[in-house]
Length: 177
Image 1 (tube, one colour):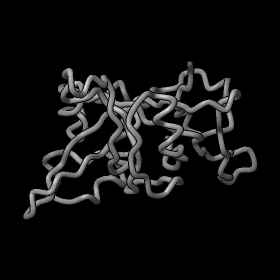
Image 2 (cartoon, rainbow, N blue to C red; image 1 turned 135 degrees about the horizontal axis):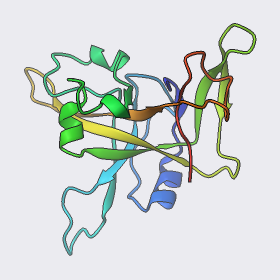
Image 3 (cartoon, rainbow, N blue to C red; image 1 turned 180 degrees about the horizontal axis):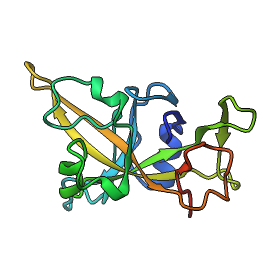
Image 4 (cartoon, rainbow, N blue to C red; image 1 turned 60 degrees about the vertical axis):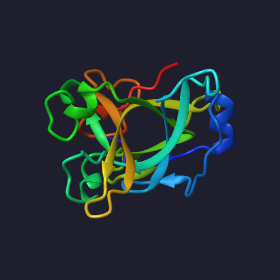
């Protein structure tokens, strides 16, 4: 389960995914940090024909019913096979609020020594990764201010042969072209 990743520069995201550049804070992201995600554009017309748009939001999905943002500590990864049933994710899943999370690298623990050692994982060709995700828009109680958030979709890894050192529980993020 990925709880730490490296966001690419806004310029690199714009070039790779064909979106407008955006403001980005920290590049090393953990649950609760603000990072970029890409979704289908809400409004597509002759004046703004872009099909995709980059937004920033909290890493860790904040469901619309949440009273505060503390939930991001447990909602930064979502198992794809249970997304439609889990209260934290099912609204975003049912509304098809899918997104792509651009990443230059992900960090996973190497357990071969018996202790977790953070290991940086990148694509062999040094291109960006596009990780499947869900996004949500939450309103801050009292102010009504909008805050976007997102989670990474994961799948159960029945055959951890590709990266067997990552996790003792065999929970892997599948990376492919």
